[in-house]
Length: 314
Image 1 (cartoon, rainbow, N blue to C red):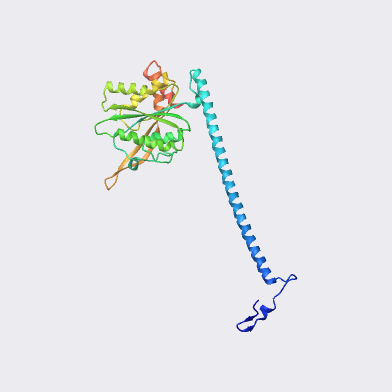
Image 2: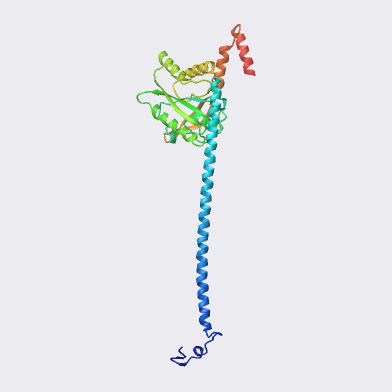
């Protein structure tokens, strides 16, 4: 051991503390500190390893729980599907439709003029007498009604009535109708299919008969019927009344709602016409009124008018 420094005798180096075994106490302290540090690092390393293992275990438990949840949901869906299939088979064996799965058929006339979401969408909420509260804008009024009437897993057939002309836009507009309803349906989950009926823009007896037969060919037993008469040729509502009457009488159809959307085309100073003051009307009562008048019996016109007045007073 060196007891002298460059400046002479170094007492701190000379008087070195020893233990009973002659070991340098200061060196022992340093060794203990080093050993303690090594153990501390090992403990910290083990702690981190344990935390990593715990995190991995928690993640695996979460994955297992998620898989079990998905499995349970899938099993529930399969059981529900089996239940519905059994119900359908039972009612089919009875020659009836399952009342829980009543199909909806919608007849919608497609306009010939060009329409766009930007310029032709309006909000019909709380307007007219249709009792519709759907607050989003739509081009086709019936879609505001369907947004509230459709339920998850409903079976729906939409029949798009297109009038074919050389410069018309009914083909494009039919696609826009489908886009609009499909967007609404993303939050509902109904099963919607689309079919089209193309007719020429010719208002002859033969043309009306073809349209009538084509519409009746889309009919099914025990369905709910909806119709939109906002657009289209003037004779179309008359043809539609015949179709609905036939369906109610011979297909046991339930006429749920016939709607008409009204807007005002207001021309502004810049020369642009905008759609304003939208109103949505439920005109189903006109259908039933027509049926009533067709079934009335009276001895004279005056007696018939009295009977009609009595009906209106109800």
